[in-house]
Structure formats: structure tokens, C-alpha cells
Image: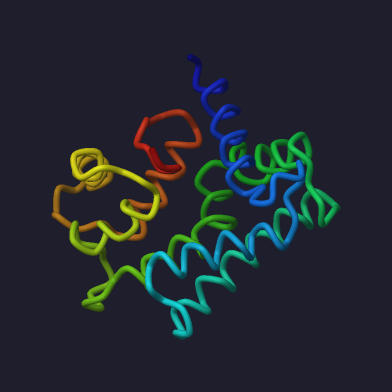
Length: 175
């Protein structure tokens, strides 16, 4: 499978995940449901960090919707705007569109406040997306590019970017 084919396939998988009500379009309510589900699975309901995560998700939706020119993106519109605003812009697109959400996830997961995610802290995220222990260990190891035993926001952004660009096969959308 070519990297372009992987990228398109992964955007389609992302669309299906974000279309939480299955009506064939991504709307603000879908992002709100996704954010609230993540916040719940991470045990951050009613916390400032949980609210910041929800706001980051909603900001990502707002940027995608503005790029698409609609608050209701069908599959084709979502893939087109994600390709144009995120994928084709590489590091800059991911930094602008995805980094605030990943930073908010890091802030929730980082229970010891050191600014990085340990394997134990990341375990909550991996469990939330359905990875088994062995899959989670392998995914963490692949993302920990500096072999520090912790994940920085930079490493997480790079992993998400490379996943969506077809450069890695880390199961970041779940099992």
C-alpha cells in the first residue's frame, strides 16, 4: 500500500470514528461527543484539564469547518479539508491543527506534572482506544524515538503525523 493510499485510508477511518452518530457527516456535536468520551475514559470529567481538552477538540473542529466552509462535513469534504489543511502542510499543518489537542491530552495524562507521558500514564490512553498490553507496549516503544522512557508532546505529534502520512503503522486509532 502506498503512503498516499494509507493516508487516504486513515483519514477515512478517522471520519468514521468522528461521525459518532453515523449520519454520514461530521458536525460539531460529533466532536463534542468524541471529546466527552475521551474525557470520561481518562477520568477528567469536571476538571480544568478535561475542559481544556474539550476546548482543544472543539477548536480543531472549528478550524476544519472553517477550511471546509461548512459546519457539516461529509466524507469527501472532510478528506479534502484534512488533506489540504493538515496532510499537505506536513509539520506546520499538524502543529496548527493537531498539536493543541495532543497537548491537551498530554496535560490530562501527565499525572505527575513533568510535561511528559510515562508508560503507566499512557496506559490510560491505550486502554481507552482498545489496545492490548502487548500492543500498547509496542506502540509506546515505537513512539519513544529518543528512548527516554517517556513521551514528549513532540514525539506524540510526530507519531500522529507519521501515522496519517503513512510513515508508521502504530495503531493510533485503536485496535
